[in-house]
Structures are given as C-alpha cells and as structure tokens.
Image (cartoon, rainbow, N blue to C red; front, side, top):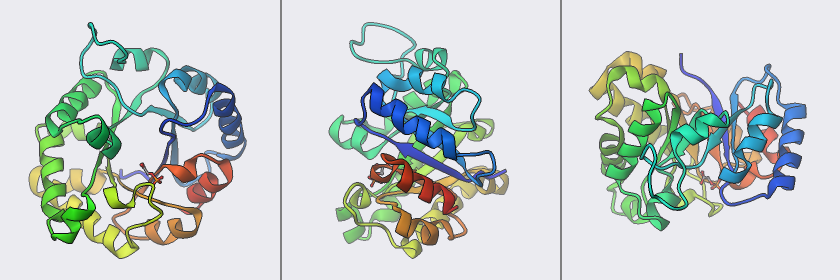
Length: 250
Ligand code: PGA
C-alpha cells in the first residue's frame, strides 16, 4: 500500500537541547490520527536522543546518511548497524548536498542502498535534476539515469523498503518551488519508469515524495497531485509550527 509520508531533513542544524525541544513540540502534536507517516532526521549525534524521546510515538527517526561498509578504518563514518543499534531503521541516501558537496556518485549511493537493505532499513532515496538540466530540457533523462543507476539493480522484493524523494536541485533551499504541475509531471514520469522496470504493483505501491522549498503555504497544492505522496522538508522542518502545518496539509 502506498504510504503518505512527511519527512523532515534537519541537515546540520540543532544541538542536543534544540533537538529535544523541537521533538517534544512535535510529540505533543503528532498523533496516530495524522494521515501521514511523520519522520524526522536529526544529525547523527542526536539520533539516540531522538529515538529515546520518541519511543512509543508514531514518529519515526531517520539518519541523513551512512557509510556503505560494515565496519573498518573510515574515520568519521557511521554504519547501518550502528544506526540500528540506537533504534534508527530509516536512512536518507543520495541527497543532492551529498552528491554535490561530498561528491557521492550514483555507484556509491547504490552501494549504500545495498548496505541499508542488507540491514533491513528503509531508504529514502533522493534524486533530481539541476537547473541547467531543466533549462536544456534534459531533466527527464537525468532523473531516469539517477533512478536506474541507484536502484534498478534491486530485486522486486527490495522495493518494499524504498521511498523515492524527487528533489529538483534548483528548488532546494532556494525558496523556489517546482509548480504542482511540474512536480506531478515528474512524479508521473518516475512512476512510469518504475512500472516499465518492475511492473504496476511496485510502481503503484512506491511512495514518491517531493522536496524543494515545501512550505505551509504551498504544501496543500503540491500534495493534492495524484502522484505526490508527501514531502521531504528541509528549512520548514526546523520549527514545529511550519512542519506540523505541512503534516496537516496531507
Ligand atoms: P528545503 O530542503 O525544504 O529547505 O528546500 C529540502 C531538502 O533538502 O530535502
């Protein structure tokens, strides 16, 4: 069954005190009655705090990244098993900031996806074109290739653990949003691409989130599109009022 999901990517924001503060505000107001699964992705150092604070609630905790190896001499890195050991069962992979700033390639991201799945984790797989790709009308190609190179080596059964997050790079943190029509057009294309490779059941079941400057005042219109199953929220996930308004827009 396709799920509605609203996930907050906190990026490199909020220390432990601020993390607890925001989580307590969300905890008080997110209920199982919400139409969407709510996910928060604080920084690595605050994940254990988050899972313990949110125990017994419907809010899930995600990491923002992880390493593909099971262990080893990789100073500063974190494994899937370490995440699981503090109660984190979801990870965001392939975020455009990881791709652009930390030079993560499709092949590297594919190996991280494999490591996450081997550990029975859910993957929020991010992908999306840059402005120059859209301007040169190459955006469908780029998105198709990111999908194929990152995920199409998977077996059909693996797709139960995959959530897609289409995030046009030109709309991330810029205040510029894809129009609801642009989002729908791309989400429909993405679902069709999955359908061609894996068939209708998987294509209909996979949740496709939109990310890129989703705010309380545009969320409802974007979420009303038939192939948009929720959002990956950056800036507006950093305060409870905006984030909850977006959750309630589903
Ligand atoms: P934004 O970030 O909502 O601040 O544009 C979205 C994201 O990077 O996931």
